Image (cartoon, rainbow, N blue to C red):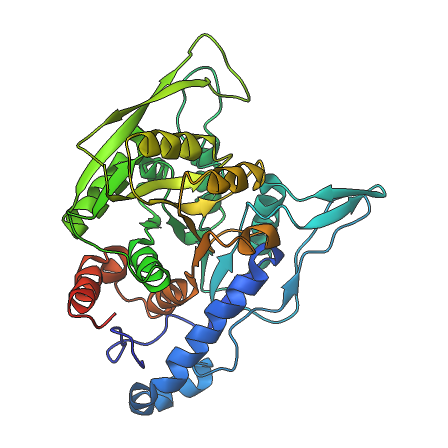
Length: 395
Protein backbone atom coordinates (compact mmCIF):
# COMPACT_ATOMS: atom_id res chain seq x y z
CA UNK A 1 0.00 0.00 0.00
CA UNK A 2 1.44 3.35 -1.02
CA UNK A 3 2.35 5.59 1.92
CA UNK A 4 0.61 3.24 4.34
CA UNK A 5 2.23 1.32 7.17
CA UNK A 6 -0.13 -1.64 6.79
CA UNK A 7 0.06 -4.52 4.32
CA UNK A 8 -1.51 -7.95 4.20
CA UNK A 9 1.06 -10.17 2.54
CA UNK A 10 0.23 -13.08 4.83
CA UNK A 11 -3.55 -12.85 4.83
CA UNK A 12 -6.44 -12.88 2.41
CA UNK A 13 -9.89 -11.28 2.84
CA UNK A 14 -12.45 -13.17 4.87
CA UNK A 15 -14.82 -12.56 1.96
CA UNK A 16 -15.49 -10.12 -0.89
CA UNK A 17 -15.73 -6.63 0.58
CA UNK A 18 -19.05 -4.76 0.42
CA UNK A 19 -19.52 -1.31 1.95
CA UNK A 20 -23.23 -0.85 2.64
CA UNK A 21 -23.60 2.88 3.23
CA UNK A 22 -27.01 4.16 4.25
CA UNK A 23 -28.14 7.50 2.81
CA UNK A 24 -27.08 9.21 6.04
CA UNK A 25 -23.38 8.86 5.14
CA UNK A 26 -23.27 8.29 1.36
CA UNK A 27 -20.77 11.07 0.63
CA UNK A 28 -18.45 10.06 3.45
CA UNK A 29 -18.62 6.39 2.41
CA UNK A 30 -17.67 7.36 -1.16
CA UNK A 31 -14.43 8.88 0.17
CA UNK A 32 -13.78 5.71 2.18
CA UNK A 33 -14.42 3.59 -0.90
CA UNK A 34 -12.04 5.69 -3.02
CA UNK A 35 -9.25 5.18 -0.47
CA UNK A 36 -9.74 1.41 -0.36
CA UNK A 37 -9.74 1.24 -4.16
CA UNK A 38 -6.48 3.22 -4.15
CA UNK A 39 -4.94 1.00 -1.46
CA UNK A 40 -5.66 -2.18 -3.35
CA UNK A 41 -4.73 -0.92 -6.78
CA UNK A 42 -1.31 0.18 -5.51
CA UNK A 43 -0.69 -3.03 -3.59
CA UNK A 44 0.56 -4.56 -6.82
CA UNK A 45 3.29 -6.77 -5.40
CA UNK A 46 1.04 -8.44 -2.83
CA UNK A 47 -1.68 -8.84 -5.44
CA UNK A 48 0.74 -10.56 -7.82
CA UNK A 49 1.71 -13.06 -5.14
CA UNK A 50 -1.92 -13.92 -4.41
CA UNK A 51 -3.50 -13.39 -7.81
CA UNK A 52 -4.76 -16.94 -8.21
CA UNK A 53 -6.55 -16.78 -4.88
CA UNK A 54 -7.99 -13.31 -5.26
CA UNK A 55 -9.14 -13.13 -8.88
CA UNK A 56 -12.45 -14.80 -8.18
CA UNK A 57 -12.99 -12.90 -4.94
CA UNK A 58 -13.30 -9.44 -6.49
CA UNK A 59 -10.34 -8.13 -4.51
CA UNK A 60 -9.23 -5.48 -7.01
CA UNK A 61 -12.50 -3.69 -7.77
CA UNK A 62 -13.44 -0.27 -9.10
CA UNK A 63 -15.83 0.18 -6.19
CA UNK A 64 -16.86 -1.75 -3.08
CA UNK A 65 -20.10 0.14 -2.44
CA UNK A 66 -23.18 -2.10 -2.18
CA UNK A 67 -26.13 -1.15 -4.38
CA UNK A 68 -29.28 -1.05 -2.24
CA UNK A 69 -32.08 1.28 -1.16
CA UNK A 70 -34.49 1.79 1.74
CA UNK A 71 -37.75 3.03 0.16
CA UNK A 72 -40.70 4.09 2.30
CA UNK A 73 -44.43 3.53 1.98
CA UNK A 74 -46.88 6.40 2.29
CA UNK A 75 -47.53 5.37 5.88
CA UNK A 76 -43.90 6.03 6.79
CA UNK A 77 -43.00 2.34 7.01
CA UNK A 78 -39.96 1.18 5.07
CA UNK A 79 -38.00 -1.79 3.78
CA UNK A 80 -34.49 -2.51 2.51
CA UNK A 81 -34.02 -3.75 -1.05
CA UNK A 82 -30.67 -5.21 -2.15
CA UNK A 83 -29.94 -4.76 -5.85
CA UNK A 84 -27.06 -7.25 -5.96
CA UNK A 85 -26.10 -10.50 -4.27
CA UNK A 86 -24.20 -10.44 -0.98
CA UNK A 87 -23.75 -14.19 -0.60
CA UNK A 88 -20.37 -14.94 0.96
CA UNK A 89 -19.54 -11.22 1.31
CA UNK A 90 -18.02 -9.34 4.20
CA UNK A 91 -20.51 -6.51 4.78
CA UNK A 92 -19.58 -3.21 6.44
CA UNK A 93 -22.80 -1.32 7.15
CA UNK A 94 -22.16 2.41 7.65
CA UNK A 95 -24.64 4.77 9.30
CA UNK A 96 -24.67 8.30 10.71
CA UNK A 97 -27.55 8.40 13.19
CA UNK A 98 -27.18 12.17 13.67
CA UNK A 99 -27.95 13.20 10.07
CA UNK A 100 -31.17 15.17 10.39
CA UNK A 101 -30.93 16.66 6.89
CA UNK A 102 -32.69 13.65 5.33
CA UNK A 103 -36.49 13.73 5.07
CA UNK A 104 -39.32 11.33 4.24
CA UNK A 105 -43.04 11.60 3.53
CA UNK A 106 -45.50 10.53 6.21
CA UNK A 107 -49.14 10.77 5.15
CA UNK A 108 -48.27 13.75 2.95
CA UNK A 109 -46.21 15.51 5.64
CA UNK A 110 -42.44 16.03 5.48
CA UNK A 111 -40.56 14.50 8.42
CA UNK A 112 -36.87 14.82 9.22
CA UNK A 113 -35.12 11.56 10.02
CA UNK A 114 -34.21 11.07 13.67
CA UNK A 115 -31.60 8.73 15.17
CA UNK A 116 -34.39 6.20 15.67
CA UNK A 117 -35.22 6.27 11.94
CA UNK A 118 -31.59 5.74 10.98
CA UNK A 119 -31.23 2.89 13.45
CA UNK A 120 -34.32 1.17 12.06
CA UNK A 121 -32.92 1.47 8.52
CA UNK A 122 -29.69 -0.10 9.76
CA UNK A 123 -31.64 -3.07 11.13
CA UNK A 124 -33.53 -3.36 7.84
CA UNK A 125 -30.21 -3.49 5.99
CA UNK A 126 -28.82 -6.15 8.33
CA UNK A 127 -32.03 -8.16 8.01
CA UNK A 128 -31.76 -8.17 4.22
CA UNK A 129 -28.15 -9.45 4.13
CA UNK A 130 -29.05 -13.12 4.26
CA UNK A 131 -26.22 -15.31 3.01
CA UNK A 132 -23.47 -12.82 3.84
CA UNK A 133 -20.39 -14.36 5.40
CA UNK A 134 -20.15 -11.61 8.02
CA UNK A 135 -21.87 -8.33 8.89
CA UNK A 136 -20.01 -5.49 10.60
CA UNK A 137 -21.45 -2.14 11.68
CA UNK A 138 -19.53 1.15 11.38
CA UNK A 139 -21.44 3.61 13.57
CA UNK A 140 -19.13 6.55 14.39
CA UNK A 141 -21.64 8.23 16.70
CA UNK A 142 -22.91 5.41 18.89
CA UNK A 143 -26.71 5.23 18.82
CA UNK A 144 -28.16 6.22 22.21
CA UNK A 145 -24.59 6.49 23.54
CA UNK A 146 -25.64 9.31 25.83
CA UNK A 147 -28.19 7.05 27.53
CA UNK A 148 -25.51 4.66 28.76
CA UNK A 149 -26.35 4.33 32.44
CA UNK A 150 -29.36 4.24 34.71
CA UNK A 151 -29.74 6.95 37.34
CA UNK A 152 -33.45 6.57 38.07
CA UNK A 153 -36.29 4.43 36.77
CA UNK A 154 -35.22 4.76 33.14
CA UNK A 155 -34.24 2.72 30.12
CA UNK A 156 -30.76 1.58 29.12
CA UNK A 157 -31.16 2.27 25.42
CA UNK A 158 -27.53 1.96 24.28
CA UNK A 159 -27.03 -1.44 25.94
CA UNK A 160 -30.30 -2.70 24.48
CA UNK A 161 -29.32 -1.53 20.98
CA UNK A 162 -25.93 -3.27 21.18
CA UNK A 163 -27.54 -6.52 22.34
CA UNK A 164 -30.10 -6.26 19.55
CA UNK A 165 -27.43 -5.84 16.87
CA UNK A 166 -25.50 -8.85 18.17
CA UNK A 167 -28.70 -10.92 18.28
CA UNK A 168 -29.24 -10.03 14.60
CA UNK A 169 -25.85 -11.57 13.75
CA UNK A 170 -23.52 -8.55 13.70
CA UNK A 171 -19.91 -9.65 14.29
CA UNK A 172 -18.13 -6.34 14.93
CA UNK A 173 -19.30 -2.89 15.98
CA UNK A 174 -16.93 0.00 15.21
CA UNK A 175 -17.52 3.34 16.88
CA UNK A 176 -15.59 6.48 17.79
CA UNK A 177 -15.09 8.25 21.09
CA UNK A 178 -18.03 6.57 22.81
CA UNK A 179 -19.58 8.79 25.48
CA UNK A 180 -18.90 5.97 27.94
CA UNK A 181 -16.95 3.01 26.46
CA UNK A 182 -18.00 0.84 29.40
CA UNK A 183 -21.29 0.32 27.59
CA UNK A 184 -19.49 -2.49 25.73
CA UNK A 185 -19.96 -4.53 28.91
CA UNK A 186 -23.43 -5.24 27.54
CA UNK A 187 -21.83 -7.46 24.86
CA UNK A 188 -18.61 -8.71 26.52
CA UNK A 189 -18.07 -11.68 24.19
CA UNK A 190 -18.49 -9.80 20.92
CA UNK A 191 -16.47 -7.38 18.83
CA UNK A 192 -16.73 -3.75 19.95
CA UNK A 193 -13.93 -1.35 19.02
CA UNK A 194 -13.87 2.26 20.20
CA UNK A 195 -11.43 4.43 18.22
CA UNK A 196 -10.18 7.97 18.80
CA UNK A 197 -9.25 10.58 16.17
CA UNK A 198 -6.25 11.91 18.10
CA UNK A 199 -3.75 11.55 15.27
CA UNK A 200 -6.02 13.08 12.62
CA UNK A 201 -6.85 15.99 14.93
CA UNK A 202 -3.19 16.85 15.54
CA UNK A 203 -2.42 16.66 11.81
CA UNK A 204 -5.32 18.96 10.91
CA UNK A 205 -4.42 21.44 13.66
CA UNK A 206 -0.75 21.72 12.71
CA UNK A 207 -1.60 21.91 9.01
CA UNK A 208 -4.18 24.69 9.38
CA UNK A 209 -2.48 26.74 12.14
CA UNK A 210 1.06 27.31 10.93
CA UNK A 211 2.35 29.03 14.08
CA UNK A 212 0.97 26.43 16.50
CA UNK A 213 3.59 25.26 19.02
CA UNK A 214 3.43 21.81 20.64
CA UNK A 215 5.44 22.37 23.82
CA UNK A 216 4.80 22.98 27.50
CA UNK A 217 5.81 26.65 27.35
CA UNK A 218 3.15 27.52 24.78
CA UNK A 219 0.35 24.96 25.16
CA UNK A 220 -2.01 23.55 27.78
CA UNK A 221 -4.75 20.92 27.55
CA UNK A 222 -8.08 21.57 29.25
CA UNK A 223 -10.89 19.17 30.09
CA UNK A 224 -14.24 21.02 30.13
CA UNK A 225 -15.65 18.59 32.73
CA UNK A 226 -14.78 15.47 34.70
CA UNK A 227 -16.22 13.21 31.97
CA UNK A 228 -13.56 14.31 29.46
CA UNK A 229 -10.63 13.84 31.82
CA UNK A 230 -9.31 10.65 30.21
CA UNK A 231 -9.11 12.35 26.79
CA UNK A 232 -7.27 15.35 28.22
CA UNK A 233 -4.86 13.15 30.19
CA UNK A 234 -4.05 11.15 27.03
CA UNK A 235 -3.39 14.31 25.00
CA UNK A 236 -1.26 15.93 27.70
CA UNK A 237 0.84 12.79 28.21
CA UNK A 238 1.49 12.33 24.50
CA UNK A 239 2.38 15.98 23.94
CA UNK A 240 4.24 16.39 27.24
CA UNK A 241 2.27 19.46 28.31
CA UNK A 242 0.32 20.47 31.42
CA UNK A 243 -3.41 20.00 31.74
CA UNK A 244 -6.25 21.45 33.77
CA UNK A 245 -9.96 20.80 34.13
CA UNK A 246 -13.27 22.41 34.89
CA UNK A 247 -15.95 20.82 36.97
CA UNK A 248 -19.61 21.64 36.62
CA UNK A 249 -21.67 22.82 39.57
CA UNK A 250 -25.25 21.83 38.80
CA UNK A 251 -28.62 22.62 40.30
CA UNK A 252 -29.94 19.16 41.14
CA UNK A 253 -33.33 20.55 42.23
CA UNK A 254 -34.29 21.24 38.61
CA UNK A 255 -34.42 19.31 35.34
CA UNK A 256 -34.43 21.37 32.12
CA UNK A 257 -34.42 19.66 28.71
CA UNK A 258 -33.69 16.34 30.40
CA UNK A 259 -30.70 17.46 32.47
CA UNK A 260 -29.79 19.39 35.61
CA UNK A 261 -28.83 22.97 34.64
CA UNK A 262 -25.20 24.05 35.11
CA UNK A 263 -24.76 26.78 37.72
CA UNK A 264 -21.05 27.48 37.12
CA UNK A 265 -17.79 26.04 35.75
CA UNK A 266 -14.96 25.96 38.28
CA UNK A 267 -11.32 25.67 37.12
CA UNK A 268 -8.66 23.38 38.58
CA UNK A 269 -5.15 23.64 37.15
CA UNK A 270 -1.97 25.66 36.75
CA UNK A 271 -1.59 29.10 35.22
CA UNK A 272 -2.87 29.41 31.60
CA UNK A 273 -1.82 33.03 31.10
CA UNK A 274 -0.20 33.62 27.72
CA UNK A 275 -0.62 30.00 26.57
CA UNK A 276 -2.61 28.47 23.73
CA UNK A 277 -5.28 26.21 25.15
CA UNK A 278 -6.91 23.07 23.71
CA UNK A 279 -10.33 22.36 25.19
CA UNK A 280 -11.13 18.71 24.42
CA UNK A 281 -14.45 16.85 24.64
CA UNK A 282 -16.26 14.02 22.88
CA UNK A 283 -19.07 16.16 21.47
CA UNK A 284 -20.33 19.69 21.05
CA UNK A 285 -24.10 19.53 21.47
CA UNK A 286 -25.60 22.96 22.08
CA UNK A 287 -22.12 24.34 22.73
CA UNK A 288 -23.10 26.33 25.82
CA UNK A 289 -20.60 24.53 28.06
CA UNK A 290 -17.72 24.99 25.60
CA UNK A 291 -18.42 28.71 25.21
CA UNK A 292 -18.74 29.16 28.97
CA UNK A 293 -15.39 27.38 29.48
CA UNK A 294 -13.80 29.58 26.79
CA UNK A 295 -15.10 32.67 28.56
CA UNK A 296 -13.61 31.50 31.86
CA UNK A 297 -10.25 30.79 30.20
CA UNK A 298 -10.19 34.23 28.58
CA UNK A 299 -10.79 35.72 32.01
CA UNK A 300 -7.68 33.80 33.14
CA UNK A 301 -5.76 35.47 30.26
CA UNK A 302 -5.30 32.44 28.01
CA UNK A 303 -3.85 33.36 24.61
CA UNK A 304 -5.67 31.44 21.85
CA UNK A 305 -8.44 28.98 22.66
CA UNK A 306 -9.07 25.97 20.41
CA UNK A 307 -12.33 24.09 20.94
CA UNK A 308 -12.00 20.48 19.82
CA UNK A 309 -14.63 17.76 19.79
CA UNK A 310 -14.92 14.48 17.90
CA UNK A 311 -18.57 15.16 17.09
CA UNK A 312 -19.87 18.61 16.23
CA UNK A 313 -23.65 18.39 16.56
CA UNK A 314 -24.36 22.12 17.11
CA UNK A 315 -27.96 21.34 18.03
CA UNK A 316 -28.83 25.02 18.62
CA UNK A 317 -27.22 26.28 15.43
CA UNK A 318 -24.15 28.45 14.91
CA UNK A 319 -25.40 31.80 16.16
CA UNK A 320 -23.90 31.55 19.66
CA UNK A 321 -20.57 30.43 18.23
CA UNK A 322 -20.58 33.33 15.78
CA UNK A 323 -21.19 35.77 18.64
CA UNK A 324 -18.50 34.14 20.81
CA UNK A 325 -16.00 34.30 17.93
CA UNK A 326 -16.70 37.99 17.34
CA UNK A 327 -16.25 38.51 21.07
CA UNK A 328 -12.83 36.85 20.80
CA UNK A 329 -13.62 33.99 23.17
CA UNK A 330 -12.04 31.33 20.95
CA UNK A 331 -9.73 31.10 17.95
CA UNK A 332 -10.78 27.89 16.15
CA UNK A 333 -13.35 25.09 16.43
CA UNK A 334 -12.30 21.62 15.26
CA UNK A 335 -14.54 18.57 14.78
CA UNK A 336 -14.39 15.51 12.56
CA UNK A 337 -16.49 14.67 9.51
CA UNK A 338 -17.72 11.47 11.17
CA UNK A 339 -21.17 13.06 11.50
CA UNK A 340 -23.26 15.33 9.29
CA UNK A 341 -21.77 18.78 8.77
CA UNK A 342 -24.12 21.58 7.75
CA UNK A 343 -23.17 23.99 4.95
CA UNK A 344 -23.37 26.77 7.56
CA UNK A 345 -20.74 25.05 9.69
CA UNK A 346 -18.39 24.41 6.78
CA UNK A 347 -18.62 28.06 5.71
CA UNK A 348 -17.37 29.45 9.03
CA UNK A 349 -13.85 30.89 8.89
CA UNK A 350 -13.13 29.66 12.40
CA UNK A 351 -14.03 26.02 11.63
CA UNK A 352 -11.51 23.26 10.83
CA UNK A 353 -12.75 19.85 9.68
CA UNK A 354 -10.67 16.76 10.51
CA UNK A 355 -11.12 14.21 7.72
CA UNK A 356 -11.52 10.64 9.01
CA UNK A 357 -12.28 8.85 5.73
CA UNK A 358 -8.76 7.47 5.23
CA UNK A 359 -8.65 6.14 8.80
CA UNK A 360 -11.96 4.32 8.42
CA UNK A 361 -10.81 2.95 5.06
CA UNK A 362 -7.77 1.47 6.85
CA UNK A 363 -9.99 -0.03 9.54
CA UNK A 364 -12.34 -1.64 7.03
CA UNK A 365 -9.50 -2.92 4.86
CA UNK A 366 -7.73 -4.38 7.91
CA UNK A 367 -10.84 -6.09 9.29
CA UNK A 368 -11.73 -7.44 5.87
CA UNK A 369 -8.35 -9.19 5.89
CA UNK A 370 -9.17 -10.49 9.38
CA UNK A 371 -5.99 -8.80 10.61
CA UNK A 372 -5.27 -7.10 13.92
CA UNK A 373 -6.42 -3.49 14.42
CA UNK A 374 -4.36 -2.97 17.59
CA UNK A 375 -1.96 -0.54 15.88
CA UNK A 376 -4.89 1.44 14.55
CA UNK A 377 -6.66 1.34 17.90
CA UNK A 378 -3.71 2.93 19.69
CA UNK A 379 -2.04 5.60 17.50
CA UNK A 380 0.74 6.27 20.02
CA UNK A 381 3.60 5.31 17.67
CA UNK A 382 2.17 7.19 14.70
CA UNK A 383 1.64 10.31 16.80
CA UNK A 384 5.24 10.24 18.05
CA UNK A 385 6.58 9.77 14.50
CA UNK A 386 4.47 12.76 13.50
CA UNK A 387 5.77 14.81 16.44
CA UNK A 388 9.35 13.92 15.51
CA UNK A 389 8.75 15.17 11.97
CA UNK A 390 7.15 18.30 13.40
CA UNK A 391 10.14 19.02 15.66
CA UNK A 392 12.50 18.51 12.70
CA UNK A 393 10.54 21.00 10.60
CA UNK A 394 9.24 18.33 8.22
CA UNK A 395 5.58 19.10 8.90
